[in-house]
Amino acid sequence: MKKIRGSSSFFDLTEEEKREYAGKKLFDPIRYGSSFNENVDQTFLWRDYLKIHVHPHFNAPKKPSGFSEIIEEYSMRTREITSDLLKGISEGLGLEAEYIKEKMETERGSQLMVINLYPPCPEPEVAIGMPPHSDHGFLTLLVQNHIQGLQIFHNGLWLPPIPPHPNSFLVNLGDHMEILTNGKYKSVVHRVVVNCEVARISIGTAHGPPLDTVVKPAEQLVDQEGQPLAYRGIKYRDYLELQQSSQLNAKSCLDHVRCS
Image (cartoon, rainbow, N blue to C red; front, side, top):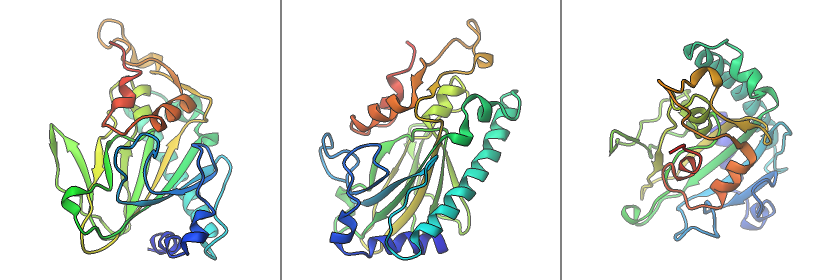
């Protein structure tokens, strides 16, 4: 796919060129790196990444040629898809179709694009591309090349890696969807395994509210007797900072706002 080829070309730049985008702070517009959080990770992950904040303000590396145009169109199209999905989720919860869009102001919300390269690993049995974790935000739309590596944790077991389907998205529910729906929708714990033969590339776009929005359970979904308040409200920015300051471990960040 065009977007896969385009994202792959960034990693073909020289190390010096890529290091121009080695941002150090969480909210830097563009960040290139390897580990999730070098300050707390006990071991580095077997991946390279490029993280780009593409909305509400679009950012992109100047190299390689044509890269910016590809991801700008892609980020716009994925926002359109996400908007439709959020309408369906709102209606499925018995709310107005525009509830999440209006309540969470998603039209000016945050969109983070993460392009991952998982190179061939000489010892895949002792390495990990990404440890078990759940995503922040409401929804993450994921595309990947033909190499499988994504595993979902379900009913206490890791399912076999999900086979990639051409020209399709895999949609992950994020922690803030679980908070907003008071637990009716659950965020998905997943990890990435690597292989010794060929590189895997994935592009994830995480969609959330504006950074200063407090996300809390919708009042219509809280019933003190039947469905009591399950999560405390938290500012989206604060949640991202909490996640970045911690070592990835399943839903450990979500546990910080879970009501006892």
